[in-house]
Length: 486
Ligand code: FES
Image (cartoon, rainbow, N blue to C red; front, side, top):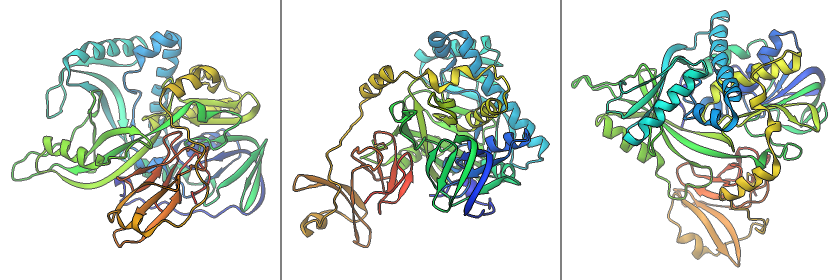
């Protein structure tokens, strides 16, 4: 399941960290947010070291649909109502500035990453939502965004209404990242084991830094910060389809970027002669039935009966309780730690906005848009209430042991299937490969003990609490868990 972005891009490998080094800022995480932060700090004359557990760009950055937009669902009208015009204005300005900053970097660094100016559309096919979209367009306009309500789009179906944001863009994220990383001090295959003050320990060495930036998608330190109480994760799926049928002349390659706000609304954009069709979101750990890619393909076939799938991939997104990312001081108890997380489905723009805000905080510049993103807006008691009412499944009494299962139990399982089985009052996860080989793992999440659920679309064990994921052999795929399952 490789994404389109990995088709041609080869990013040079970096060494592991060995020994002890000192720097002004250590950035943990070599995705878009981490590398942009490092690049902007380096531009400001700050010495910076990036520590990446695997390879740079190997996490969510390669799974994005790479839209650079300040259009983040139906958000502006709601933000203005809930937080006030000033806060909503900060959110809008931070994201609009992030788009301009991408433009600047692409130009100044001469980056060949297919950066394309484009309009972004939020659309609905339901008449009852047209009013809401019109309100969103007015709300965005009042905050300084060049937006308008329209019923005309390039989509191959009628819409009841759409909000169009002008002056947005899309690009090839890995080609951009590759160039941004050039010349930075980066250590790969260097997972961080612990952070105490400014001392960052890895299994090969240490970094002593004046500031530490956590840009690890989901923070892996539970306390302080308590990010596990204020974020969950969602998965969504993308197909890159070829809609060209020369005989019928019915190819479809939209110039704009589209995001549907209806129940089964699709995300659409073109890239490399293909259409990226995204959707089928669900909370991580809640996909027992599977069939997400098939459902997406059914929708694509409904629009272009002759279309063919070329690539498929999935994304994992951190969702905050109020829909605004956490960017800024990690916690009151750790004045020299910074965090960038909770970007929802808007990772590209949020990464740049985060990099600009953290650069400003570290270099002592005032950033007029930082307040609305401050992680300190979190109140543990209120958030815990929201989080619990969100339907978490906290299970703490699962066995840590793995034991032999009776042959009859595993024989019943069809090849290529997995699931949780109960044996002598204890639950374990079983997956049977196509060749009949059986893999048995603990279904206790090593992060905080929730019960993992089988994800048949990706043959993985996923945690419904905070979204850690593991392959069928137990190897960790996604954090916040720091280790695999037994
Ligand atoms: Fe937190 Fe699983 S990710 S308990």
